[in-house]
Image (tube, rainbow, N blue to C red; front, side):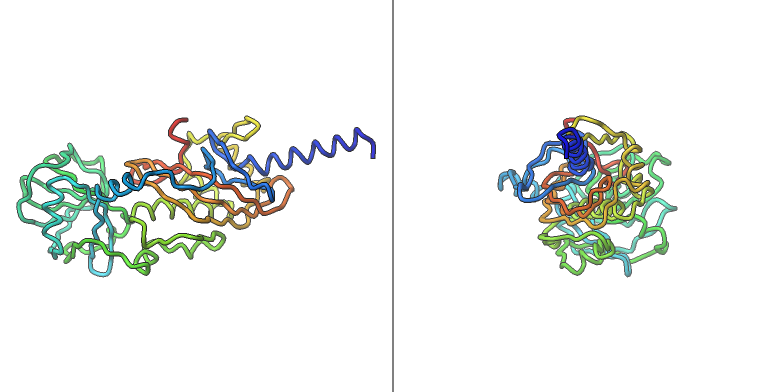
Length: 331
């Protein structure tokens, strides 16, 4: 083979491997590769590093002490929520376990009278879907699930936020007995609410879901859902989970918009077969979350088929009460 032909062939190989390694990374990516085999990343990775936990134990303990998970049983439906640590909320939690006869008000809330609580919490001018509140003048617990933005409801102290899917409220009866208690979730309950087994092409490895909070599991579930959509080339679901302002950046510096990246998936230029999520670490801080794990990806990128590994971090942002993929916070 002539030197020119050999050089040309090598150049093509480099381009193909570059596509494999880089197409799946988001804005601001850095990485640590396994030298024993080719590596690749899934869309949404940024600030890629080998998986490790740098957060100090004291910080983790502080985060846990700032929130309390509760379980609300509406008949046959179980809903989980994360409560804050205000004086109002602490007084409410001291009442638990508690069974209330709750009434439905339109398509927005369930409410019931409770013992008077101290008015020392987060005052809000109006509710957001998923809010668990204390209605001061009515001395009532008010749980909001719909019609956010279509009201002007003041006099509320927000105590927490529902982390379960709010669609369960759509078919509930007008009057229902609700048991509220501190959550002590067993693994079976976690898997019932977030059934990861429905993702046929995604394998979750090295994680104890029962040790996670409801919000952590919700973020991880969204990650797995996105990976399944990638393997199905389900552009509708991918659009739902990836905001329009998402930018994908290759190691070469070439950037793709969301739609440019999706076009490569839709036309088969990028074909994902299976994705493993190995040893995920989920961190939630307000409306920002991250999932750090090793991706084990079986894919065909622009004609090059292989299994690739890369460790990195996916970033999420809560928008309108839903966790969506996002660029890294510093982008």
